[in-house]
Image 1 (cartoon, helix red, strand yellow):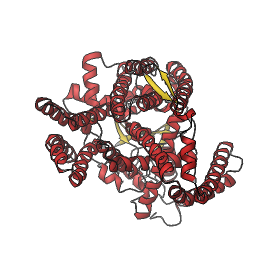
Image 2 (cartoon, one colour):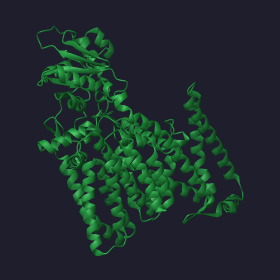
Image 3 (tube, rainbow, N blue to C red):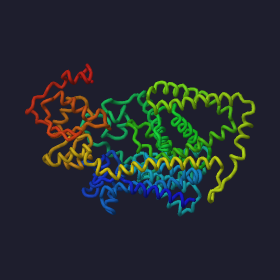
Image 4 (cartoon, rainbow, N blue to C red):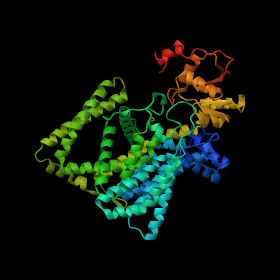
Length: 617
């Protein structure tokens, strides 16, 4: 059975390897990691445009540089490596979940996630640190679990040394790897209260990894921030500095207060839970805590984590790591990105399963208490879902999900009232769950499954089949990308024009710096999202910018979009810019040298009308 499951995981990996994006060169922002790898290989430093990188850790560029040395630097080879890391990661995580809960839940989790369109699209279209981190962090947790079990002295020393190196490299790939160190420290402290002998053993075997992990994180953070070109808080400053912002994508909103932090946590928790449900079901989920697909996974995860910490399963390290990783990203002030969730998805599924199992046990042992606890929650969620369905109006998807959720929570409230009022509920539920149809064992290969387990297996198979059916159109789009889309990407079109029509010493301002630098081979300054025309114009002059690339984007990662920022400064200084090229969505402006053109008043009514009556805003 293990062989068949691992073979299926390998088959999914082979499918992802084949289905990667067909492009002659880097089409997206992940080219930054390739440029940093080139700096390591050819210039002997880690950085970009002759400037050392001090914020993003160097783990992924190091891996890409190694791949370039061994297999070549072609885009297809580097992109295919992501499928390899993902497959290795699922093989490791399968072993972890199999040890924790058995083959069934391990197979269902890895196959559901491995076939998910969310993951399939990410691994076949981009280079992201989260993918190798998924593998390396899983390897670290697998090693921790090995150390926590009985081993010979020589194997203990070997695993302890290996764990230290793996944890350090995890932190170098993704700074959130510090959650591994926090998990080990928390498990030692928590275990000290219950079993000092186990706590002492953990302290001895985990100490090298804890120390090396802390030293690695401190040494990297000690490098400080990248030099800023613009008077903006947040990026490109350190991660700690970015945490202080109200919204990282919109730095001019300023710093966050306590209300902003609470709202951020609420939004991030809901978004992460909804996306997890979308990963498992391959279906869009309405972002509301009253949605069935948000409320149920969230409650089950909380119960599962609590059970893992308090139930004495011997694997509390998994729960501590899960909590530490989630704590980092629910506080992260940037808009949700899938790569921030992906490394924790396997553990989220594990704790959802454990939560469901614990709730089933409680429903048999303490049905009235459980119903009394759930009744106010169900009533509140019914009220919210009913309000959402009323406000949805003509929106079909939102309306259907909200109406269905409202009906479910109303029925759950009635059922809770009925359970509370029943005289012989425990006996009734016990007899219902002990019926032969639920206890009968069905042989499947070397396994023996109950009727409910067979139903769960069938549901998982249907979800995997549905996910793969969605992966196939993604594959077709990937295979046709070079022919249908690559030549029309506006940032690349503009950068190639710059390379052909400008002097090599000219300085360019662009929103997507790595992409424009890769194709233009010019010095590129980040076109910061600033709406103050005077500040923007002073920056253009101070930084010696000769050309500005403005893209009319369908979606802008930074806010306000670059076209909005530029239009405002152009209205304030109409004689300071000259349009030299219009290339589809891309506009290229030349910055007229100071004194040649006449600048307008930066607080012209056309500008202040957009900003507000107070120019200081």
